[in-house]
Image 1 (cartoon, rainbow over the protein chains, first blue to last red):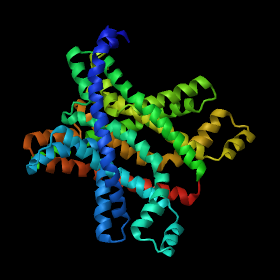
Image 2 (cartoon, rainbow over the protein chains, first blue to last red; image 1 turned 90 degrees about the vertical axis):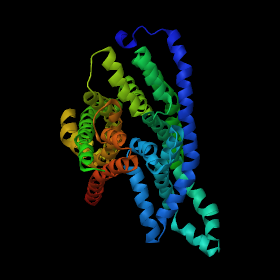
Image 3 (tube, one colour; image 1 turned 180 degrees about the vertical axis):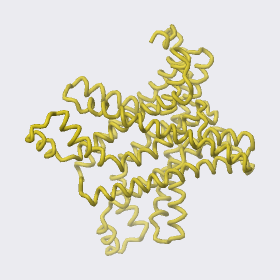
Image 4 (tube, rainbow over the protein chains, first blue to last red; image 1 turned 45 degrees about the vertical axis):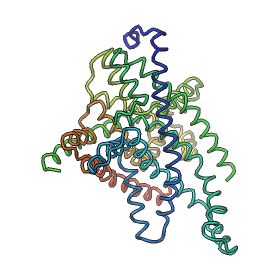
Length: 223
Length: 214
């Protein structure tokens, strides 16, 4: 243990904290933007996948399955190292946001689709009987009920998005793992700095998953 | 993409499979004691496992891989990338497998344990001959689904230098500057490997449902 800790002083830990926090802010930013862009995109994909038109359904489900089947690490590098091939260069933050959004939208679309599928058929028939337009039916009847089913899973998935932003380390995004790696390679004190890094995630993710579990239980008792 | 580069990419495939399968086997074995402690009647054991499971799950895999590789590797004893990846990803798998087993255990009717008591079977025999085989059978589809997720997590092994698919993809990309083609191909390869596993998961789930074991 003492070998791992390598006589790291409290002063050093305090010196690293702001650096790690700077990195973690980038993780939080990428997560935030990914959620804001990924939700509507995921909803749109879910509608396409549910379409009865084969020419819409098949490309949409293929896109979603590839997005979910390929590792996020590969997608991130695909966007960052791949786009320059068609003369489109994104800096690491932009590439991170694009890749995380695309990947998340695919997962989100499946969560939303499960929610939409969970709404009983009678709701759709009742909307038809009331002569609601298709968009009104979706907005006022189907979506509110679907979101009630989907929201715990969506919140749970938001935690996973935060965790997977750490993969952007591989495209030189100065997020928290990149900061930790740099501090480690300079001070050669990998263990304390990585434990500190893990702490950032623990502090956010454990309370968040407790909250998600509580929401799930409450939702289950209502249905 | 030239033929040589294609072969370089394919040379990563055994490593991807090795890390995934290795971690899955480690997880399948160590998941059993983790699950047993998690459902223990002793408060302190149960609570410490709940905390451990939450801790392992809340930290991104890449941080675990770095912790084992760099922290253990520089401070305690030198460790090669492949064993470091197996230990860290195997530990993540153990925790998740424990939760899968626990779900499978909950699906076993309590009458099974009661019948074992009525037959005067010992606790160990009840577990080994009655409960465990049923848990294993119920868990198969979930384990197959989890294996796909694990393969995607295993890609982080490339960041510490395990020459797997992602690693070779990155390497060929840096040589050719054809990231779109190369990384696109690597991504599709991952999807292609997961397709038969997903199929197996669905088939085994349907078979289970037909037998009405749950």
